[in-house]
Length: 381
Image (cartoon, rainbow, N blue to C red; front, top):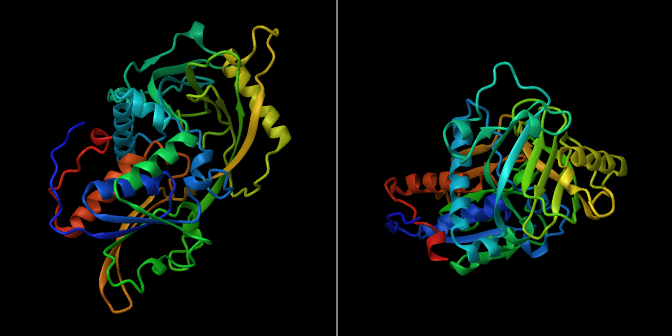
């Protein structure tokens, strides 16, 4: 993707709080716009096993959960998918980033009477979108669609984002503990121009943000490594595809290393960090019905070996993502821009580049550079 680029008249000093997929993506786009950018975070790709680091625990496939009327989220998701497709154009880049092409399949117990194609199928965002014929539907499903999409290996993608950020001249500061206040990034720094708040679930605990609308949604998954290659994602919900509030959710997400994510749960307000054995058993059972190729044909249909169990907490927010700008003051009264970008729930990866573009556009407005067009990060890697 080659896009005309201009350099801002003034290089801004930008601080980003958070090194999840949202914080890293926004930081990269702001670097690409010519700004001086530093990330501050306690949890980061330097420690993917950090229990409080949400992004590594994501299934990380692209299947938009945007409501048919939510044009904002649709736009973010569409931009992100196009960026993922662009990564795929370079086999070397895709390998390093852990992004692979994949057929996506979504199933329902019944076809809704008022069914219309998902927005991404109806607008041609996902190539090959079509209804699946009845003979190919799994047990317990009477309706399904298929389309072209991607899956992302978070264990490779997040370090790749960090490497890209640092390689472009960004600076990373590892925090020993979470910030008590967002203003710690700017109150005593008269040189800072912009602060981006990508703190995720942490926005609930920052004293000067204290967003009580942020609620963790516990997700438990089982990671397996089947004998046979699984060449599709598969999900089953009770209502529209990708709706996390549709009741029981079941999903199968292959990765580039042969591992497959089996999920899952969506438990609002549940903060238990420990995997539940019975839940894991139920997840495995549902996924084997949805995706029989997980079974080992040599041993007569044995389930795939389990690599590990994972629990993570989606940073959901009542009312949706907070994408909002405000002006704050330093200790000496100097104005600066604060952009909040958090509360993405289970769609942080699939909206990441779209949200990063949105953040960058807000910063351009702050500098009076509304006409600035970002160049493609990927064309230079």
